[in-house]
Length: 94
Image 1: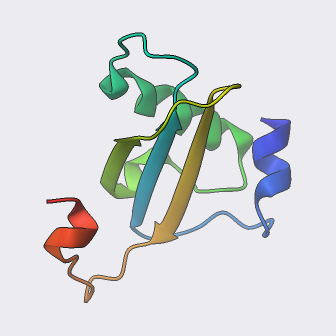
Image 2 (image 1 turned 30 degrees about the vertical axis):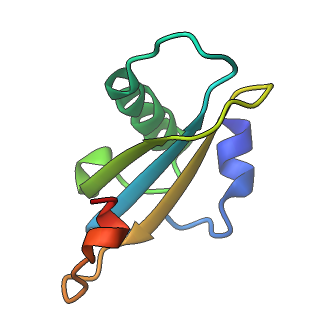
């Protein structure tokens, strides 16, 4: 959580509805169930205390498996959701 706290540029948690993208870079070719990852990440970020108020703010959550790298890595992108913004099929990965 120290790392999370120190990567955030503001001391004030984000308010409103949020969009989260998790980019997962596994360490090898073993099978992994990506759907098990978000809750642990969300709970760690909530516990860090300066990113968002609560993970219930997430309206749009996406997980993308990327190439293999060592050590493994999860890159987390968070932004406030603009209700006027409608993602294109390309942005949704369709």
